[in-house]
Image (tube, rainbow, N blue to C red):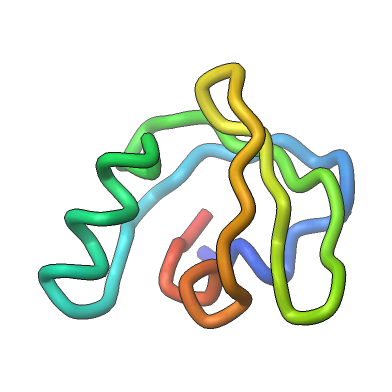
Length: 70
């Protein structure tokens, strides 16, 4: 397992675990970051990570991406 921030651009992975505080986990779950979901990194720019998840593009902070294990 490694954090989402370590994924290469264009690489598709499966989410294994979402960590962090309860409110952070719930927020990420509403965006589709749940165990078993497929996610791919589009780009990482100025502290943000842009990913494709459930056919949507989502930008999250690097700190939040570090809590998502793939």
